[in-house]
Amino acid sequence: MTQEPDFLTRASLYFAAGGIGGAANSFAAWFFGVTGVNTLLGISLTPAFTPGWLYLRVVWGGIWGLLFLLPLFRLQPLYIRATFLSLIPCAVQLLIVFPLKLKKGYWGLELGTMTPLLILALNLVWGYTTALWLALTVQRKPVLG
Image 1 (cartoon, rainbow, N blue to C red):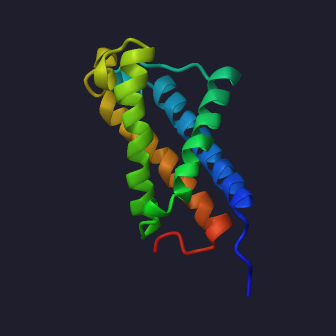
Image 2 (image 1 turned 180 degrees about the horizontal axis):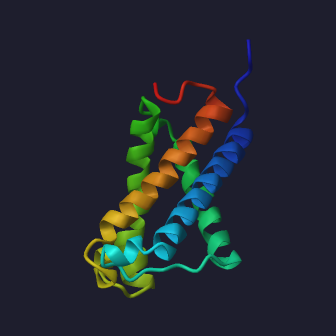
């Protein structure tokens, strides 16, 4: 019989998983920018893959990863939980960061009308990567079920 890790151990593992999700999200955002996907979608967003940019996104990915600890969000199967939790950082980006911090309007529409869909897709990358990492390392459960 294995013992459940204490809260601090679990929080550390979930933070790390979220950070890995943040790295995957960052790579996808950069890749879409440099390959012209964003331009094709009419989105004027081409992030530079710099240490400062990556650091911020990995740390915030880790912070968002702590959402997976909340018992309210223990939806199964795991991909449903990941999809639902991905909506939270997506909403923050679209309703707080873009309009208030970056001055790009609500939903980031000043960057292009497809911006909300791009942000949703990138946050799904974060959520699914985080959930996959948790399934493989912490929960040791089948990924698709």
